[in-house]
Length: 233
Image 1: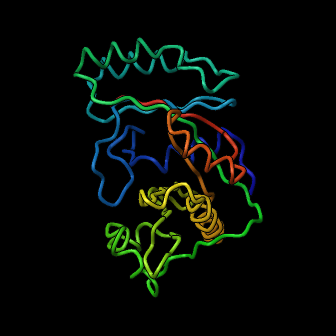
Image 2 (image 1 turned 90 degrees about the horizontal axis):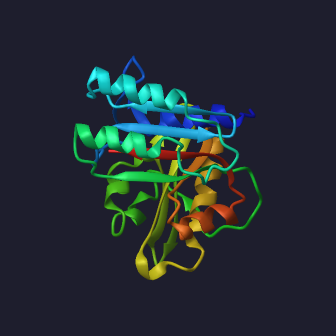
């Protein structure tokens, strides 16, 4: 099935966070989240914007942030910062100190043909994960599909479905430091994306603007930019 940019942005937002019935954010959508959901999330695409606010914001602050988000223009260059970025930050800083801001591109991975050194990880071969990726070994069922590059019987690069819905999966890619620079990330992400498509989901890949290595992986996989994230915690 083909989706437009705004539909993919909606799928991306649903994959990133657990929502309450008023579409406010409860938590990040991971088996064992280490961080709370951001207080403010803005997703932008060339076809429209999406915003979400955390469930515990005061009603007056929520209303003012929504008012600004509703007037956020749809831009032609997704690298541009949000028009109201300073205002969002000032409002949230007055509520509580800002602990983190994040901004980065959101891609989908189209189907391409390429050789790969990676294998799909299942219950039958998951032992290769235990030395370097014990968290994935322990949570494989929740984080599948997953794929890895294996050397000497041990996974050295792993790509898993860190955030998952019935429609989409978000890639989480990790490579042991001494194995970086060998193209293993491309291989693992490619095999992961193939497994995600086989499950009937859309493979999505997000990163942040400063992570050029991650963006290089996306480029080698023919990743297509459909949106960008901006959030404040």
